[in-house]
Amino acid sequence: MHFLIFGALIILFVAAIVLTSLAGKKRREALGAWAAENGLSFTSDRDFGFDARFPAFGCLRQGERRYAYNILSGLWRHRPFTGFDYHYEIHSHDSKGRRQTHHHYFSAVVIGSDVPLKPLRIRPEGLFDKLAAAFGFDDIDFESAEFSRKFHVKATDRKYAFDVLHPRAIEFLLQSPVFSLEFDSKQVIAWRSKKFQPQEFEQAAAVADGLLDQLPPYLVAAMKEGTR
Image 1 (tube, rainbow, N blue to C red):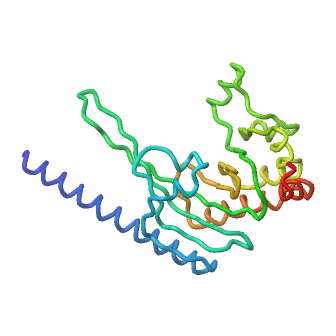
Image 2 (cartoon, one colour):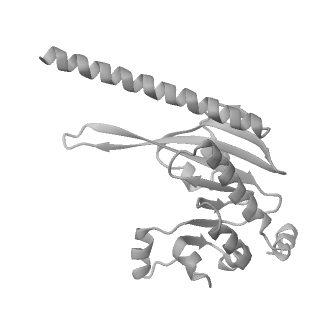
């Protein structure tokens, strides 16, 4: 009986490996085809340097053994584009003190900006944010009550946040698929805490690119001149 149980477990383990391998192959093929359709390059190779390449983006600095893979790159419309799957791992210990490794995966798109930017974070509002607000740890609220309920916004320069998130930009985000967005000084990242389907890379790029298109002319001029 024990031998049969052990054999069944081995079969299940091998089947899981095969199914995971087939799913990975299917994903690589789908992403490669999508990249070709959009004039982008594609590689499935792992790149362990994305956290150093984009050091301001907190989502790329979680855990250990971080790397990007299934990397798409090129131009999206007229802006630099990088899309990728991302892996990191965290460790915990069970009740017997044994170390356990937990693997996490998600996808993201980075769109380069043709004007300087300032730090700004826009992400879906969560239950923890509502609880934190009750204790005075609030984010930036806007005239649009719907937007303030839906998104959590943080910026070191509050005026910059209001300059970027003017009524037209707010309406654009309310009508768009929801992603977590973050600005550094040169680009915008759009991501979710799970892997994208191929069409979601396009959606993420459209949101990040579209938000940059919404930057008002006075802000663009001031940022280029270094007066803002």
